[in-house]
Amino acid sequence: MKKLFLLLTVYCLLFTVHSFSQEEKKFTHPDTLRGSITPERAWWDVLRYDITVKPDYESKTIVGKTIIKFKEIKQGKLMQIDLQHPLIIDSIIFMNQSLSDIKKVSDDVWLVNLSSTPERIHYSPSNLPSLDEITIYYHGKPIEAVRPPWDGGWIWKKDYLGRPWMSVACEGLGASVWYPCKDHLSDEPDNGASLSIIVPDTLVAVGNGRLTSKQKNNDGTTIYKWEVKNPINNYNIIPYIGKYVNFSDTLQGEKGKLDLNYWVLDYDLDSAKKQFEQVKPMLHNLEHWFGPYPFYEDGYKLVQSPHLGMEHQSAVAYGNGFHNGYRYGKTWIDLSGTGLGLKWDFIIEHESSHEWFGNNITMKDQADMWIHESFANYSETLYTEYLFGKDSGNAYNVGTRKRIANDEPVIAHYNVNDEGSGDMYYKGGNMLQAIRHILNNDEKWRSILRGLNKTFYHQTVTTKQIENYLIKNTGIDLSKVFDQYLRTTQIPQLSYYYAADKKKVYYRWDSCVAGFNMPLTLMHDTKSQRIFPTQQWKSLNDAPFFDAAWIVNNYYIRIKEVNIEK
Image (tube, rainbow, N blue to C red; front, side):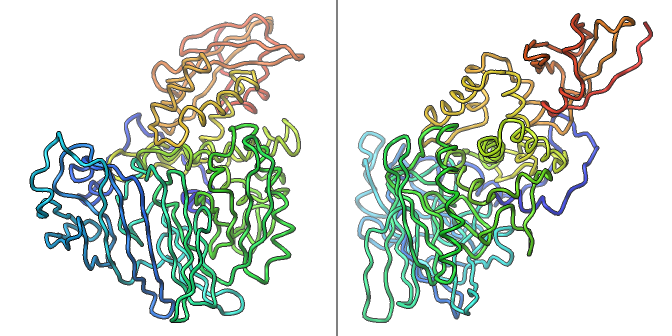
C-alpha cells in the first residue's frame, strides 16, 4: 500500500520510454543481505514466531523477546537474524544455553553461530532435528515513523484526548524494524504466530487473529496475547495500543460463519458502527470474485490506526476517518476522478482485498509487489461494479489511468529488496481489466481469479507462477502482454487506417515490445469479434466493429489513425 500513498502527489505523465531492461541502480551489500536468500538464511525454515513486546511511551523505547521455531532444511551453522539499528540484541538462548558467538555484520543484520553448543557439534545431514527454536532478547529505541504509512517504524502518537496511541507500519522497511526475525517475504511461519503485548492497565492492546488471554500483572500493566493459526508474512504482524473498545458481528460466508470484530477508539464508536456497515457487502463481493476469505480460523478485524491504513492480516489497519473516498490530508478524494470512489470507503475495501492478494497469496520477492497491488487495485473496479453496475466499474477503472506515471517498470530488481513503480496499482489494475475484456467471459474470468486463490492458497509465489497460471487458464498467450505492461514503460499503440470504401480497416501494433500480440475482443450490436493485431498490418472486413473510442475505453492503449497512401 505504501507506494500508492507516495504517488498521490505526482499526477503528471512521464513520456520518456524506458528500454526493456531496467535502468541501472546502485545497490549495497546491506541491500543484498536484506533482499536475497543468503547462505545464512537458506538452511532453515521458519515454522512459528512467538513475540513479546513492551513499549514505553514516554521514552519511545521497547523491550522484547522473540521465540523463533524453525526446521533445518539442510545442515547449517551460521544463522542470519535481522534486527534494525538502533535496536540491540541482549542475548540469545539456544538449546538452553546462552550463545556468545553473535556478530553484527551491518546495521540491520546479525550472524549467530549455533554450532558452539555440544548438542549441535555432532549434527549431520542424516540426523537433522525436525524442530528447533531460538529465543532472542532485545531492547532499544526503534526507528520512529514520522509520516506513517509513507515511511515505516514504530508510531508514537496521541489520540484527540491526549492519550497514548501506538502501532507500527513496516511494509517495505521490514518487520525487523521492531522485532528480530528472518525478514524475507519468501519464508512465512507455517504454523502461525503469537503476539503478547504488555501495556499499562489504562490502555488496550490489539493484535492479529484472536485474543487467547488477558493477564493483569502486579505492576499496573496487562498482557494481551493474540494468536494467528495461519501462515502470515512478517510485516503483517502488528501491535495496536490505545483506548480501544470492541464491537462484533458475524458474516455468513462461503465457508460458514466468519467472525467480524472491530476495535476503535472509545469516542469513535458510533461513527464506526455506521461506517463499518460497508464491511459485509464488501466481503461478500470479494468472496464472490476471489473465493472464500482465506483466514476463517483467525477471523476478520478492522482496527482503527494512527495512520491511513495497511493490510495487516486478520487485523486490517483503518485510518480513513469514517468517511467515504480516500483520505488525503483533511479532505477525501476519489482516486478515479469519476465521483464513484466517493460512494464507498477506500481503505475498508482496498486493504481488505489484500487478505486475498498479499496475505493469502504473497510475493516471494519485493520486486513482485504487483501481485499484491495490481489485484487489490482491480478489486476496487469489481466493487464499484458490484455497487453500481458494470459500466460504472469500467468507468472507475478507466478513470484511474490519469494516475499512471510510466516512470519505471512495474517489476523491480530481484534479490535486493527493491520495489518497482507505483504503477503497479493503476497500470496493473488496467492490465487485469484488459485481460477480462479479451476473454469476454465473466464467469470464466471469475473462476480464474478464484482459482488463483485456491491454487496458491497460503503460499508465497513468483511473478512467473502467476503469469503461467493466467496464460494456462485463459488459453491465451499473454506472455508479451505481461512483458509490455510489467517490464517496460511503453504504452502500446494500435495504429489503423480505413480502406477507401470505409468497409475495411487495417490495424497493427506500434510502440511495443518485439512480438507484442495482445488480442482485442471488439463489440458491435451485442456481437463480439476477436482480432489478433501484430506488428504487421492486418485487416478487418467488418469495419463497424472497429470503434476507436470503445477500444481505448476498454484497453489501456493509445490508438491512432494514420495516413497511408491508398
